[in-house]
Amino acid sequence: MPRFLSAVSHRYALALLCLSLLAAAGGIFWYSRAIANAAPNDAATSSAGSADAPADDAQSGSGILLGLARDAMRDGRLLAPAGSNAFEFYLSVLQLEPGNKTASEALRESFPRAADEIEYTINRRELEEARREIDLLREFDRDNFTLALLGGKLSAARNIVMRQHEAEAERIRQATAARGAAM
Image (cartoon, rainbow, N blue to C red; front, side):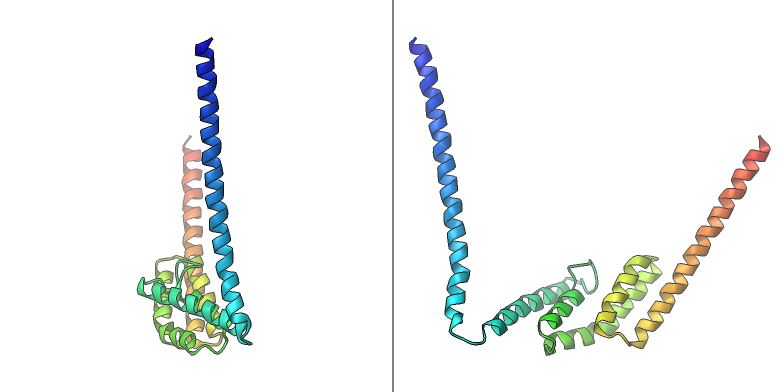
């Protein structure tokens, strides 16, 4: 019987330990959530007295996006990958603040380099990516003549690829017909 009581008491001790750990984890989680929720509320209360609160939010969002854009430029992510490149970050700044001079100047200054990257993408036959990148630049300057030229080059590259695929398909048809006739 003592052996039975020992096994039962170990089970209860183990269960009690697990419950204690679970309660401690829950407490830590609750505390971290309370602190995280309190920080934005404190910031909101301190800026609630100012009439510029929406502008401050836009400024902080723009500041974050400008920092991300600078990091992307430094890392060589001017147009790619989609969703994490300098052009998209700068365009997002302009959506928050249409008159942001920093974003406008950065886009204008990097436009020629971006156009070169698109041309390189077309030359590598990454045509869908090139289309996405051209569309991205059009969001900044829809009527740019360079984009019209790149669009023409992209269209020509698509025609070349289509003709290559048609020629390959015809070669395969002829090879299949020749094998069928030989049998």
